[in-house]
Amino acid sequence: MGKTRIGLIGLGFMGSTHFRIYREMENAEIVALADVDPVKRRGDISSVIGNIGNADNSVPLDLTGVHVYESAYDLINDPDVDVVDICVPTENHAPYILAALAAGKHVHSEKPLCRTPEEAAAIRAAVAQAPGFFSVGLCVRYWPEYDYLHDEFKKGSFGKLLSATFRRLSPSIDGNNWENWFMDGKRSGGALLDMHTHDTDFICYLLGVPKAVTSIGRTILSSNQGIDHVITFYHYGDGTVVEAEGCWGAPKTTPFEMTFQVICEKATIRLMAEGFKVYWTDGRVESPEVEATTGWHRELKYFVECVQKGVKPDHYQTIDSVYQSFLITQAEQQSIDNGSVRTEVKQA
Ligand SMILES: NC(=O)c1ccc[n+]([C@@H]2O[C@H](COP(=O)([O-])OP(=O)(O)OC[C@H]3O[C@@H](n4cnc5c(N)ncnc54)[C@H](O)[C@@H]3O)[C@@H](O)[C@H]2O)c1
Image 1 (cartoon, helix red, strand yellow):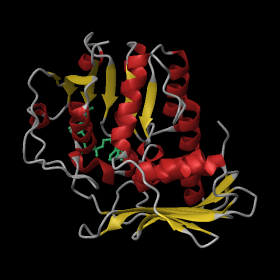
Image 2: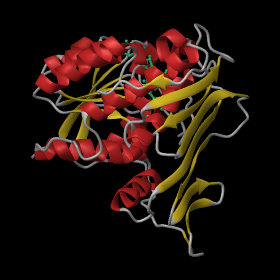
Image 3: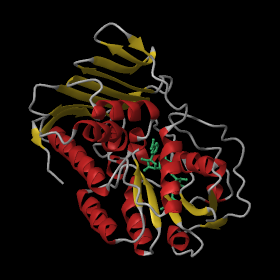
């Protein structure tokens, strides 16, 4: 089979990250790009800033052989495109996902799934009917240390869960992005829907659907009530303490942190300042060897392999599981809106 032909929509932080990853892959090629910004359409990404893995963006991307569009819909209707990869602000995920699925394309779209519950339900229904495959960039499920934790926990290696804590703390990204859209709660959903979603999603992937959540949150920098700092307790009703914190409210000079500590009966697993370690209850301390790569590389590699083989990409995620974690984020927002009350989670 020939290379899988990718059409990339949006060439900001995630789009340029995906661009470089596809360029390294032997079984994929970028054939089309769409961006509303004429500067990006020339491959100039010098204004792009992200939180981790920042590459040298002063060098323009080479768009030789890439069909460049202003309108995402023109790219979606390009017959040469097999996979539409959506890396635009969250408010445009749903319209582009729905159009690309309707056009019969395979679709990989960045997280969060979309902006509103109505859009999420429409995407779920469309994916069920569509011939194309669908996945969302919930890269933490694919991130080597998190994937290891997930697989070993599910095998029972660590025994019963006692407590878990997850953190995602970012320096402020105010002013870093296209139209500063992240800082508009209406467009991005704030750090709660945008960033903390990774940990909420992973907790659901690891431990199943919580019965309820209690969240506290506050707005620090965002407009339109975007929550810049959130802490959520996930209630499983079994005595476990499960908690996650997400924040993008600190000064720009602070480092980015993504960490966890998971205490189980037989071991405590930590991704922290000391590295990735398993502290066995019997005294042994191990540093598990995991692939030295990112979840972004693994998610795109996996999706392209599935497209090449014609096998549904359901090892790491299904639309139902993605929809479910979206519903948990909605319960978190509702909890905050109602004064941090315990809020039942809707089952997908
Ligand atoms: N998985 C992750 O770890 C991760 C990290 C950062 C961002 N994201 C997600 O990726 C998506 C993009 O975020 P980003 O950081 O790349 O943002 P960004 O602001 O850096 O880039 C957005 C790009 O989209 C373009 N654009 C805007 N509206 C468009 C439209 N209607 N059609 C075509 N192009 C359009 C802009 O010109 C810009 O080039 C968001 O959904 C975000 O939540 C995911």
